[in-house]
Amino acid sequence: MGNFKEVARKSFAKKFMGDRMIWVIGLKVAQDFFDDPNLEWFIKFSTLHIKTQNQEIKIKAFRHKKEILDKINDVLENNYGYTRKIKDIRF
Image 1: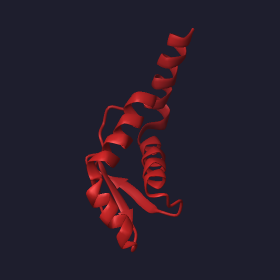
Image 2 (image 1 turned 180 degrees about the horizontal axis):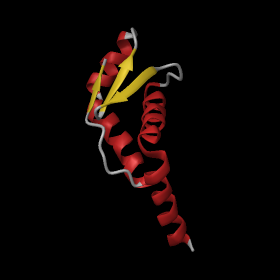
Image 3 (image 1 turned 90 degrees about the vertical axis):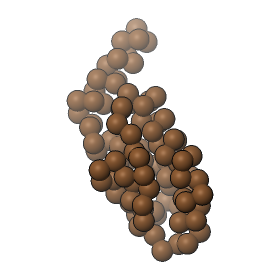
Image 4 (image 1 turned 45 degrees about the vertical axis):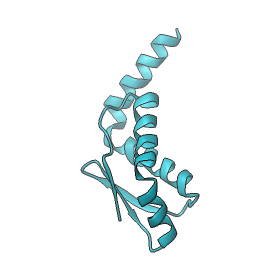
């Protein structure tokens, strides 16, 4: 029964959630990483764009870019079966 649930969940995510899902998950991981629930963002062409004037967030994102991208992509792939990757972070 557990295997069916896993397949059904991934199928549902692919069919009905699509690109909308990656926005929410990418935002949640970034907000948790930066500890800022008011972070403005959007995803366009496999790039996470963060809108902020806070220099500390920009510096932290630059230093930990690979780690942030890995976390976002891991959550998308492992939890939702999403195979496209977020490839970059820009401001």
